[in-house]
Image 1 (cartoon, rainbow, N blue to C red):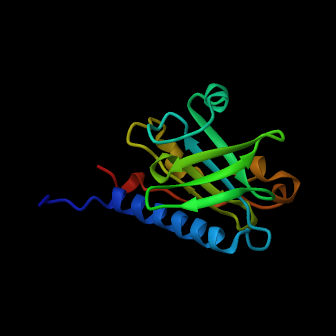
Image 2: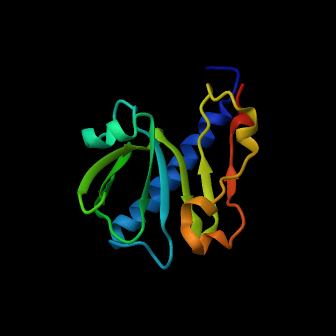
Length: 156
């Protein structure tokens, strides 16, 4: 057994479990409650991510998807979730592994999570909250930044 407790990875697992629980609740209800909506940025190069070729070409490293007014076929597993989203009147299925998620933001309640990778070289990124102004349109422009949980301080 290792002499060190890996708090960083344990927190990442807990945060991914939170996202899983939230998405499972939405899948069971079949809709988002109230004004909740999600902006989810993920790594499109993750080996288990599945998206249409044209989306991979348009977003070769990362992509932000919005779950708000219309989504379909939301299914959540232990490893990730699949959902069909509308891209310019073209419904497209996606599979997003939880460990491919870079940010998860719900601007309606000013909540956000950012997953920093060990090779992120911007040390200040761990201290910078996600600004929901640019993702939530006019409604969220009136709200302050979201609270972000960052785990880089716990990593060795």
